[in-house]
Length: 201
Image (cartoon, rainbow, N blue to C red; front, side, top):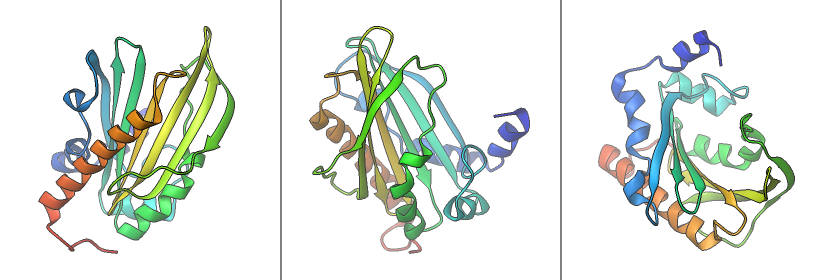
């Protein structure tokens, strides 16, 4: 991402940039002790990354932003990233979820090799539509690792959770519990902001 892309990605009002961060979980929401916020950022939808879809372009034209936070827990050492993406309509949000796998961007600083990846079936998250659950098995410098993903839409907002650690550190019931908390927080913010049944479909 070059300097021009950084500037373009921040074009928007202060409230528009801050809006997605109000939907994200914080340290106090996470299970266990020792969590710290490593980074947080927001940028205009469709402004950078993979080539934007039509839904992303409409979100960009509407001045909507995405936001993300990354957390690390001291013991056990594991990471959690959560992201929300705002779209111009519920249909646009629904259309983006099936393509989440193609839009995963590898971390160039992560010294791991992907050895297997698969879609996981049979889970449910209350309030989350178009559910996508995915797992990447990786091998790091010392031991096997993995990342477990959960994504879906809450009305016009897509949320994605990424849980990374040594294998066995992120049981699915814990991942799904956090996904439920994130989904609930998104819905609460949407309800407070828009009131019932006002969103475009």
